[in-house]
Image (cartoon, rainbow, N blue to C red; front, top):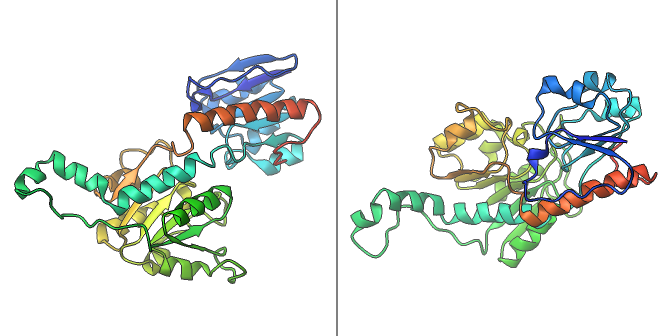
Length: 316
C-alpha cells in the first residue's frame, strides 16, 4: 500500500512517526497546496491529513483511495458524506490531548483573571517606575475560587477542565445544546451564558455550532465575563467579539483558534490584539510534546488496525 502524508509539518519535527508494520510505500510532504492534492494522492491507498481539505470533488477523482487517516480529532476538513458514498474509510485521533488542552484553557483563564498580559505590558512601558511604590493597581486581579465556569460542550476535554477547575474551588455549570431544554446535569444554554464568570467552548464546528456565540449571546453575558475558545474559531462571530472587547461589554477573551489559520493582518482576532484583555495563541493548546507523540502513535495504530481489518476510531 502507498501512504501519503500531505501536511507533515503540522506535527513538530521532534515527533517520531514509526513505520507501519505492513509492507508499504511512504511518501511525506511538509505541506500541500489545494492544487497539489490530486496529483499527490492519485496513486495513494491511504491519505494522512491534518488540515488539508478533502472535498467531494477531490474524492471523486481518487478511486484508489481506501482510507483517510486524520492526524487530529476534528474532521471538518474532510467531506464525510462523500467518503461514505465512495466507500472510503475515515478515522481520527481521540483523547490524546486530554491533559494538554484543558491545561492550556486553564492557563488562559488564569492569565486573564489576573491580568498578567496587561501588567507585563505596563511594566515594559515603565509604569512601575511611574507608580513610585512597591505595587500598583491599574488592572483588577481576581481569584478563581468561588467563580463559576460555564462549559459549552461536554466531551473529554471539557470534563478534564471541569476536574481542574473544581480542584481550584470553581463552581461548574454545563450547558444544554442551544435551542434544547435543560436536562439532567445540564442548564439551559442562555442561563449558563447569563450566570458564568468564565465561559469555555469545547464544541466541534458544524452547521449547527457555527457562530454559536454572536451579538445576541454577548448581550446575555456578564459584563466582566471571560470567554475562552480552545475549540474551533468558527464557533464565535469574531467581528462581534472584537466589538464586545472594544465596547467593554465583556471582561476578556482568550482564544487558541481562529476562523482562518493563520489569520490575515486585518482579521478581527488580529485587530483584537491591541486590547490588553485579549490573548491569542497559534492553535497550540493540543501541542505539548507528550500529546503530539500520543497522536503520532495513535495515528499509526489506526492505520494498522484498518489494514488488519479492525475498526478503530472510525468516523466512516
